[in-house]
Image (cartoon, rainbow, N blue to C red; front, side):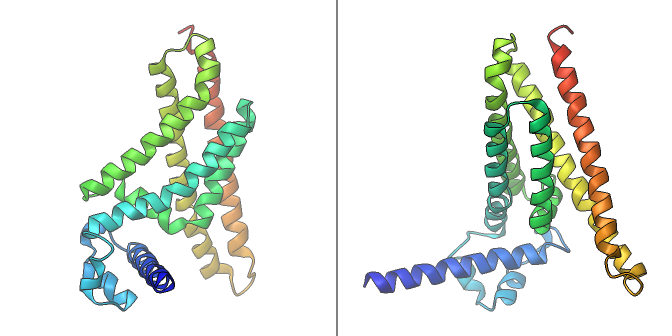
Length: 228
């Protein structure tokens, strides 16, 4: 009996993940507010009624995608904040982590960028809540040092919000660099198959350099904030 239950649970989880993957794939070209349940189930190859065994509605699927999109980034950022002590190490680690996340999960990043201010309220609220968790984690990492320097909790959180907003902006910039790869492929693939990779790498390097410089400016401003 337990084996049968285990098999059924595994199949249920497999179907749920297939629905999430199908939704994410369809959202490459449209917003969640325009996506139909039947489009998702048709792509998975299940009956529309099967959808409701996994999600209440399309907004519920969208919230699950938010958790999937930002959950792994939480783990990376927590590790960086815990392991790196100096500002420069944190800056390098944060920018590298964001770049890796965008390369690994471009569809998830695109979904977050589009739906952060989209038309589905529960998804907007879920994104805001996840970003709020980021702010809490960054603020906690800064608190020990900054409280000793006389910073208030409100100012520490304001600084953390700057860092998180910058991470979101940087992720969007890395994502926008992706068309460089397509453009290079169309124009140069026949002459140089590596042209797309070189163009994408160069664009990413420029974005990373700018992101690091911007974080250094924030860090420099932090040093003088108490005297302002």
